[in-house]
Image 1: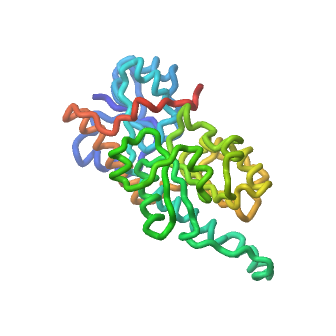
Image 2: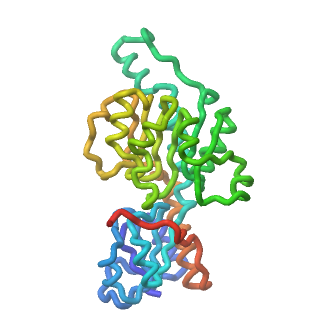
Amino acid sequence: MKTLVMEPMPDLFWDEIRKKGWNYYFIEIATSHDEIEIIIIRTKTNFIKDRFTEFPNLKMIIRAGSGFDNIDIIEAQKRNVIVCNTPEANAFSAYEQTLSFIFALIKQHQICKDRVLNSNWKKDFMSNWEISDLKVLVVGLGRVGTRVADALKHLGAQVRGVDPYLSISDWKQKNIEPLIYKEGLEWCNLLTYHCPLTDETKNYFDEKVLDTLKNPIWLVNTSRGKVINESVVEKGILNKDIIGFASDVFIDEPWKVKKFAINNNVILSPHVGAHTKKAKMRLSLETLDVWSDYVNRHQVNNEVDSRFYSISNK
């Protein structure tokens, strides 16, 4: 099945294709769109309705990576196009990025550096927190969120979760106490997001959430930028409802820097949570596993949950 790779992939991806003798199937430039049956994309290609019309015989889109908000899932369903992703590829590195944010926030790494450089030392210094001081609400208990929850529990934090798509048996297996969103917001002092971007989760952290909080919180986002309303984050920092904020994702990338970013209790990284050598290796192999299972075994693996719908192009 002719496969169009629309974005750059790691060298290992192409090495594996050559090793397995699959060169005939894969192209990077299509002379005829009619022959394309599978497309592989990453983050920069927005696969909206008009794109589907360009490829009349398309059967599958493989999103190399975990997020799928750049694909119109509803249009894919209408056209019977299967959409798959590679959720394991980035999970471990994204989980580590989240933990590093949490430690950097509660140990005030940036504030401490500023004090050393300015010879301000410990005068009027707000005490650091310990993990056992945390009441963590994990929003989204998929591969990343579950790893974060397990690690923080092991380190001594109280952890509860929000995920409306988990069954009772799922919660028992994860051994995490479930809460509805409002209850969790009233309980927590650290809020970390690990959910996909959907109609339901766009602006999931909004003005209403800020009003619901009972405690000042540490806020972490390694999911998708549009899950959090940045104007509300700014307000929360100013009125001290948010003690500190860390994010690897933004509404627009590259990001137009907001004023609140200059605060030492704000930690930012340029969407590099999955930017590790091992993550790139897993991305290459998992993408080809999904492709091979479909082409060679007529099996569909890692199909995107039909309950989730892309909103990025609405």
